[in-house]
Length: 376
Picture (spheres, rainbow, N blue to C red):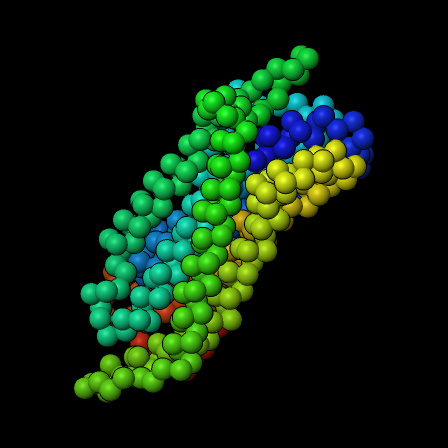
């Protein structure tokens, strides 16, 4: 984990420290990431809460994902890099309380993000598998239960970090480190937890994402629309199939971005430094840490960016709120998210087929223009 790595790195006398110019670049980099992450994910939260049509079951999961990314932007980005990259003696300046609390929320946020993606994939899998069984689809109540479950699981898995992360004083310097002295064999306990974190934060979620979205892709490309008694119902199913076909490249991109951004950091902390401890004394270990950590933090701004680029309704909502915060942003009027779009959602009339990228439930499109913006 971050804090143990900091202590090990401080023991390497030959480790190349960052010059002042790179420290300034580092602070600027993380500051910008923090601003974009907090702002972007707050926009996602506000848009979903403000516009009633966006308060669907799938978007409740999207809201939870935005909260997870917001936690990373608040608790991970502003604090975690100072001890490693900025101070040559790798001191901790934020106090003993924040030492334990921040480590706890960092771990919980990553668990929450990864398993929310898993829940979203199950939602899309059920929507495709049980096309003609509305009772099997995710409702807002079920989505709320799933969100509560992911929170309980994430907080439970991160609890050991709260218990073992402590502020210690060595030669007059405060450091935030992990002390596994609750266990008889501290080294074994640390390794077991590290492997468990890698499995449950990354390996298992990624395996589930690959399986579910592969199944969806195969099912959508190879299946035929079943015969139904109602022509309107058949039309809805056809449109649903076409919608998901357009989304397969998107969900593959989302899964790949999560995998690419988090894999280097999780491997470095949980596997590589345990298998090759001499890497802690490598001259460029700080630069490797910066690359892995910065890439992981970058992921928290990816989701709002995807919503903005791929979803016309979210893009309009982002511009709507941004124009009120920053006057230089020009926004004329709401078109897709008008006052009429804030009426309560009517079950059975929507095509909620956006996997990961939220498309609001709405009445079947009546014009060509609506069809284009729906799948832009």
